[in-house]
Amino acid sequence: MIRRKLSLAECAARAAETLSKGILLTSCAGDKVNSMVIGWGTLGVNWNRPVFAAYVRVGRFTRELLDQNPEFTINMPLSEPDRNVIAVCGGKSGRDMDKLAACGLHTVPGETVSVPALREFPVTLECKVLYRQEQDPALLPEALQTRFYPADKDSSFTGSNRDAHVTYFGEIVSAYVLEPEEGGDEA
Image (cartoon, rainbow, N blue to C red; front, side):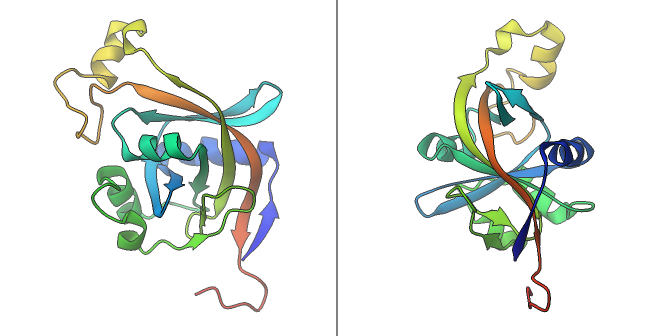
């Protein structure tokens, strides 16, 4: 695989187009690699650096991995995402299974971070956490609290539940699309 570099503008356009369809945030610590679906994210500039802000609920396995290893990749498809991947990575916990193996996803070593890219979701942002902040849902308007943080849904519920989000501001240290090498066999 080769990496064709992308500009921040190209990344922002791709994120805006695909975020609502489901993109993946991949994290790893020790021998555990996990991808989860994210539908919320912000790409921009903070502290004069390009950043991707990812929102991860407190009870998620991904949060545990990010707290052990403050690096992640954002993985976006070139077209419509595979619905099975979205269902498994968005509805199952990496604590209980190897989601990448279950979905037939293939990792490609990161260029500058310890977290891999994903061949099947080739548009990749490599990020190093600059700052993390646990959100306080009580500061939100009541309608948003009720919709996104319902008190009657415990942490194991895969949709909106009572857990607050932690915002991870990751500096984008590399951005690229994975492409097969000309004449290479990438199957």
